[in-house]
Structures are given as structure tokens and as C-alpha cells.
Image (cartoon, rainbow over all chains, first blue to last red; front, side):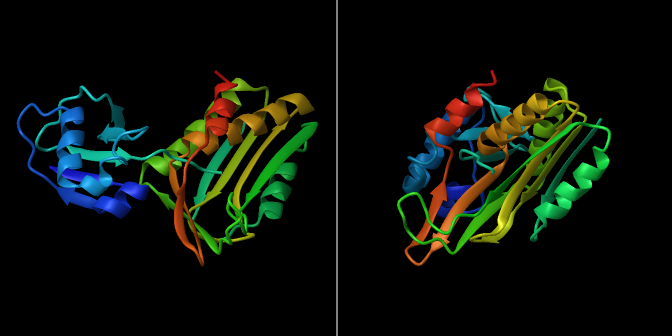
Length: 79
Length: 152
């Protein structure tokens, strides 16, 4: 599964990674898996970081599927 | 009613944007505009050479358009404009132009205020200040979220 990161997350993990996730993996389990694999990003993956699948924000309980492209958004800010 | 939002990868001229809006709003009584400019110093006083605004290939422009459309729906305005930079922005350069025109000043002021509160917390950008002391990511403050909350 492809996972994209932006902002400070991209700095600590990379812009795009490919990971194998177990069947029935939720977004919250995916966060834990990534935090274990990328300890530097563990804090950055928590507070106010939203997960998107197919350009839509999803809840932590959302189950990701093998073909999904998942994106993690740190807090956004314009202006 | 005319609503336009644009993402600019290079410098833009806010005075030209305002002149175009005033021309388009010739039947209105009020035009209010705001220009955000990249600061030469960070909040803690460190020198800043440039601001880098990362954006999302699809969602950034969508977010600008959504915010502009919702301002137009919410207030009695005839024109809404948003122009937002992305990429590297030198200190002193304009980052954002947000403006509204209306038959009456109050709605135009409110629309401009609303546009900026939403852009600060919902426009899809990731902002980094770079200077001699290094780089740091800038995220919305609690005050920014509280300002956004005024419109709920």
C-alpha cells in the first residue's frame, strides 16, 4: 500500500513509502505500525494529523484496503 | 455573483488584483481587501529569509475554492477573490490576497475576515520558515483555531 506524507511528516518519513499492511487494518492500527517503523515520526503522527483515503478525510476506525492510497496530513495553514 | 480562487506558483501583484476587483464591482458600494505578506522575522525574533508553502496537487486549490464559495454563500457579497501563493516566498513578498465586494461595507468586511480565518486554518498548505538559524514548521495557533470558531 502506498502512503503519502506532507509537511513535517514528509521531512521525517519521506514523501511516499510503500508498506505491507495486514488484512482488516484500521487507520489507527496503521498509525501504530508506522510509529513503530519510523520512531522519529511517532509524535508527529498523533496530534491533529488527519488521514485521507481517496481525497476524503477518514476516521481512525476506517479499514484500509490493499489498493488504497493513504495520505497523512499534518495541520494545514494558509495565509 | 462572481467567485474566483487561484493558486499562484510565482509572485503576483495585489494592486492589480484589487484594481480588477474594483472594476468588476463598479455597481457595488464597498470593496474590502486583505494582503498577507511574508514576515522577515519569526515569532521568536529569528531572521527569516523565505517562507516555503508546500501544497497538495489536488486538494489545495479545492480548499481555496470551497472557502471562497462558502464566503459568497454566507454574506451579502457580489464578488469574492482569493489568490494564494505556493512554493518559495521571499520575506516581504505577498502570500495571499483575499477580497470581497458588496453593496454595503459590513458584509464586505465580514466576508474578508471570514476568508482569512478559514484560510489560516483550512487552506491545504504546509508552511515552513527558513533562515540562517535553520527551518521550522509553522502550524495554526490556538488563537487561529479560536478565530475560526467565531464563525460556527
